[in-house]
Structure formats: structure tokens, C-alpha cells
Amino acid sequence: MGTALKDATALASAVRSGEASAEDVIAESRARATAAPTLCAFVQEDWDGAAVAAEEVDRRRACGEDPGPLAGVPLSVKDVIAVAGLQLTGGSAAYAGNIASFTATGVRRLQDAGAVVVGKTNCPEFAFGAVTESAVAGRTLNPRFPGATAGGSSGGEAAAVAAGISALGLGTDYGGSLRWPAQCVGITALRPTPGTVPDRGIVPGAGGWFGGANQAPPAARLQAATQVIGPLARSVRDLRTALAVLSGARFRGQASPGGADPHNVAVAWSDGSALGPVRREVSAMISLLADQIAPEVRTLTHVPDLFAGSLAAYNRLRPLDPMIDHAAAVAGREHLVLRANLDAIHRSVRAGARELEAAMAESVKAKRRDLAVFDTADIVLLPVAGGPACDVSGKLDIDGRSIFGWDIMGQCRAVTMVGAPVVSLPVAMSSEGLPLSVQVVARPGADGLALDFAEWLEGFTR
Picture 1 (cartoon, rainbow, N blue to C red):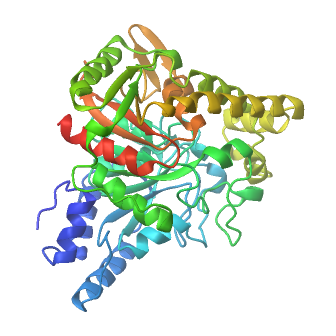
Picture 2: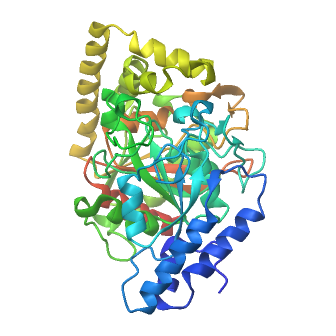
């Protein structure tokens, strides 16, 4: 059976029905990886392990057992998430060759649902970066848009899914690391409400944990409160299935096909220009989208400064949040860590307690103020960034002005700070033919609503 770039839902359905075998699905996945030797999406591929897992999926189906909602789906995992027996480097030369002895809870749940791990994907060192390049695996390329970055920090994941090597990716998001790379390659991603998906198994974890027996999550306060594990996929319906599996009993939001009725939904929107430089074409894109959906939704409100206070609070707090886990992880290995990252780690642990507490208090107030938008709106729409994918050097042109690095991700960082669930969804193309995506945001805990509206919008914009 040809499975060319079918989404995970279609692949699992084919395996469950017997139309395709999991072994054939994995073989096709491997063939695509072989055909893209310079992509540098992976730190380590594990096709032998994948073949064994696929054989077990097929055995269960043949015996009349339920092989799971993700039966035979090729799954890739970002290299800051532990998978026992596979490398866990965090993109750092300091941990090149490190092998995890523990599997993250989220990965295990996906495997139990029938997903087949095909490998670990590249990320910048310790997931610090808007482009994906590491001393471990080199620079990840964009398989669909040569010359543009695949984004960061889940850039290896985005590239693997976009290239058809994996049908489902598992990454992390602290300041946009799922949403931004998803836009760069033109796929979907979900940043769940913090706490919905277990965060055990992310490195560095408490005490500098790097994949051994101690599986405690990070201890730094901002990171612990806002960093999440989440899926990347080719459709919103895949994100919904992945979240149901990843979260266990915490998420039961299985919507009817097509999602919720938009006529019952109040929408607020902004072009994100209060959160950083935005191209004129991005402002025009989201303004046009608002005009197009206006007849379909209950109410539509323009809120120009949406989440601006939360971005300021995030930007103040993040460099002060003591990266004690990172500091422990690099101890004795400092000479192998990128200088910029080492400096950031050391500055954070030297931050004064009074300044840190003031920044924490400001973040709580800003979050409370900005969440008030959900008193009158069910859904918020914002661009993922001020422009499309930047070039491979990390430079993004905003109408003649160049921005770099974290400045690209202001629109994402603001949503991170408010703790809301958000779907990154491609809806248009830029002047140079690169994807432009919107963030579909709901109030904290309303992950199902964000998925419902994103699924409707996915169909509306096709």
C-alpha cells in the first residue's frame, strides 16, 4: 500500500483494518529517510528496533487484539526526551553518545497506543535556539523549503514529520519550540496546557538528570511551570489523538468530526505587532482571516495589545530563572558546552533573589491581567511569528529590518507566559512562498476547544 504522506490517523486506520501492515509502514518510512541523507533530522535512527515493534503491532492485530489508536504510526522523539536504549544528548557535545536507561512517560504512552519509535531527532544544544544546529548532528535542513530553516528548537522533529519519515513527532515547547518549527515546515503542532502531559523524562532534569534512574522533571520555576511536551503532526485530528494518549485521563475531549460549531465561539485577534516586529503581509494575512471568519463566529473582537504584559514579564523573568539543572548537567563538562549557553546558565544562577522574586510577582500579575481576555472570548488568534521561516543563519527579514533568535519568537513567548493551550496551524503563504501559521489559543485547560476550533479553521482555510 502506498502511504505517501498520509497523516497518522489514516496510517493507524489502515493498520488496524489490515489494509496495511505496520511493517510495511515502517519500511516506507525508512525508505524516505534513506532518500534524504543530508537532511540531518536525526541524532540516531533505530530501524531495527522499529521493525521489531512493528512486528509486534502486526502480531497483536492478527491475534484479534486491539493494536491501539496509533497502531504502526512512525514516531520520532526530540533529543531532550528520554527513550531507553537510545541516545540522549540534548544536542550537546557534552553528552555525545549518552544512552538513556529510562523512557519518558509520554513516549511510553504513545508506544503503548501502538506508535513505533524510529529515532531521536536533532535540536540545538539544550533546546536553546530558533534554528536547529548542534555539535552532535549538524544543521537540520528544511525538507519542503530549501534555503529556509526548519526552525528550533524542535526543528529535527518538524523536518522528520514534513519529510514523511515520521507521521507523529514528540517535542518540547518553552518559548515556541513546537509552534515556530511547525510553521517553518508547514505542519501542525500543539502546545498543551502545562501539566496536561507528564513532563518526566525531559533533560536536563532535576539535579542535572540526563536519562538515568532518577526521572524528576526540571526544578527551575519558570521552566517547570511553562515547559511542555507536545506533538507535531500533519493534521489537527492527529494532534487530538496524540493528546488523548499522552495525557491519559486528563484529556477526554474527543470532538465530533469537523470540530465544534464556530457559530458558538467568540474570537479575539491581534496581528501580534505589540509583541515584536511584524511584516505588513502578516498583518494583512491575519486581518483578512478575521474578515473571512467574521460571518462564521459568534463575535469577533480586535485586541491590538493582546498578551503584551505577559511577553514583558517572560522576557524579564527567563534570564533570571536559575537554571540549576543545567548548571549541574554541565559541571565538569563546561569545555564542551557552547560559550553563549554556558554564559546564560551561569548568569541565571547568579541572579539576585530580590530581583528574581520581583520578576516572579510581575509575571503572576501580568498573567492574571492578560487572561482576562477569556472573560469575553473563547478563542484568541495570533500569528506564530512576525514573518515566515528565517534563513539558515537565523535571520528573518521584516520589511527591510533583520531580526534574530529569540526576537523572532515574541508572539510565541507571550502565549507561553499565560499558560494557555495553543495549536500552530498553517493558513497562508508568504510572498516568497513560505508557510504562515496562526496560533489558535484557548483558556488554560480548554485544550479540546483549541483543537476543535483549529480543526474547523483547518478545513475553512483549505
